[in-house]
Image (cartoon, rainbow, N blue to C red):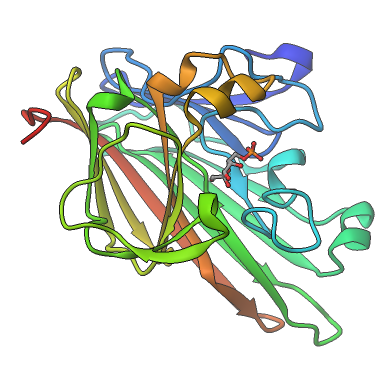
Length: 294
Ligand code: TA6
């Protein structure tokens, strides 16, 4: 989006050259580059960088609702709001062990209170580690003074950039149960080996491990997601038909992206006044020698 429509962004850099960008609009990471300047996240070439539309790609924040079940718009409203910087990023990190980070905060507006009548403070820390790892930590607190609890679902809707979806495997979700959004959210059990892709997929895997790997054959690269407080994982690729039906998604772009989303969907989270929930994901991109079809 690069500042389109005056949208402000924060750029994080770390000493070895990796970088990340986050827009105050949506609190959305839209770029994560390794030390060679390679972009690791997918952003659609047709992304509409104009509120109230969410930016297509990067890491949209789905809160206080994942998906379309519930009274709110699809994926809630956090990705359609302007966040504010709570703590300016410290100056350029001076040594190899220091981290670059920024703290953003979102609180409900009066308008928000009309559609979701709950008081909260949502603090999001985005950190770029010395090795180029990208960490997102969400802290959501119920700040109600009227004793009102609230319940929410959540996802980091991460769009990974891949060379060719037909040569990507996901490891860590084998044999797990999942809800299939393409079959009325019915519950199925995944087969016994790594997941590969040859058609539209939209599944919520339940009670998943803390570590999930996404192997990109052509790039000889493995993305690793390490997560905490997020028991589920959504896997989504729209494939050709759905891609063509989205104005902010290039017709062939489905070949070069895969969403694997650390999430809390099956069991909504309830916070009493004063209680805080934390959800964290750490992304790394490491060289891998996997050959497709193994
Ligand atoms: O995360 C998968 C999903 O829920 C899909 O069903 C699809 O709707 C995708 O999110 C994108 O949603 P969006 O509202 O960003 O177009």
